[in-house]
Length: 226
Ligand code: APR
Image 1: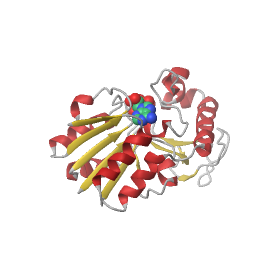
Image 2: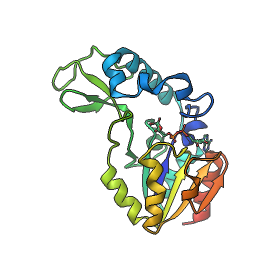
Image 3: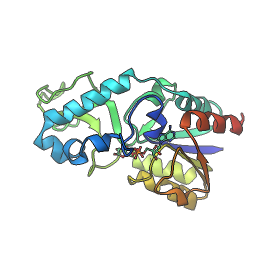
């Protein structure tokens, strides 16, 4: 069985990382326009670096939970494509390989001048030179609002080929990811949603499994068998 899984901030919530749209979420405490757009970075790069330095530190301190581990185990038994909107590396640290990060990654840095990419240091700052071209234009390798998500060609193909599409811990508010269930469903996949609460695109799924990801995901993986 070919399985495509999409994860969102909800899968890392029980590892202690804030989601975006909850009452105490990141977008309650920060305005998207101040920290997560190219315009914000052009206006105040120091503020944007501070925001992502803090998130990088939080992510480094967090540990993968049972949901991340269950997905890593699933890959050894099924043909799995794991797509995430998350910029943390908890899937990798749980043992998943080839994770497709469509919104980029906190562990990587990008030069806005020459497009060179490298492993991000724990603390990035606006004045640091790019290791390749020395321009002082380094930024987190994160996809901001208004920018193109990464690896979309591979993702659309994986969704079209999937027998089963599962979205875990995502509110279904941000496209293109919010449209993945519709695409996979039209191409013939069964679509399952796992969330602790209602999502914006619940109608696109054939089945919903309500509950915390650290319980629902291991249970679902166990139910698939070998
Ligand atoms: N188990 C399962 N689901 C959970 C849990 C949990 N323990 N805790 C929270 N959730 C669910 C919430 O109900 C919500 O639907 O996770 C979802 C988190 O939604 P968002 O905060 O909107 O995160 P996400 O969908 O990943 O956001 C998408 O928005 O701002 C951008 O780039 C950012 O990648 C992010 C994108």
